[in-house]
Image 1: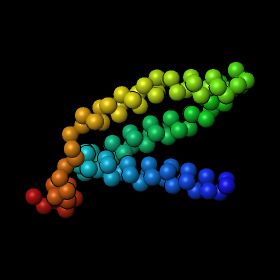
Image 2: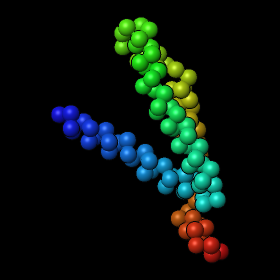
Image 3: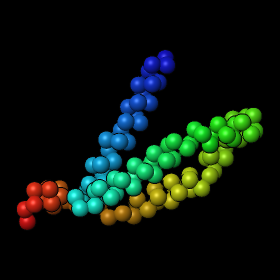
Length: 108
């Protein structure tokens, strides 16, 4: 059972790294990909690395798991996630495929 959970977790977690460059390329074009990907990975890795440590610290302080899970789910970070989801709904559609392809090849 643990192996199946590890497989599902790995597939879901790996999808983030495969989808992000494609989505960023479609929305920002080729000129901004480096900057946008760099910022995405810096903030993603910082939040991913600090989540376990924060939950462990809260468990050590309270000696129960109910408080860390409630406090993390109500944190400002989760508010930022909801806010950014709302902003993503307002984002304009990405460049048409032909325009993005012309940026890659350098043709006009």
